[in-house]
Length: 152
Image (tube, rainbow, N blue to C red; front, side, top):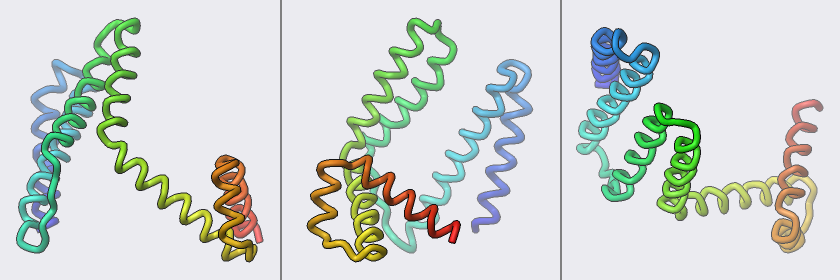
């Protein structure tokens, strides 16, 4: 099934490129790729329903797609309007996805804390207090640890 959907998405991309490339130029390639990947995603979401259920918040999805389309279309506007509009739409996306962003940040911090306590044997409470006071220092310390592992 995956092979079929990939071939179908490729055909859709080629057809949209042939139709729109004369009028939109390079933007046609980007538009065709976005549309073909969206069709690919929709078909695969539908075909995987028999294996497991994926729930999507339709309101959140609609807001995110609208913001992405708005950011893409703002490229055709004057720069004085373009950048404030992009900032507003991006801020709306961040607000809309704040729970997801917070979850990713927490998982990243927990991963960093686990790596540091495993490598250096520090107490977890000490590391957590360091993270709360100096989050950038702890991230840079973790990066130095990773670089040291690769160089050794």
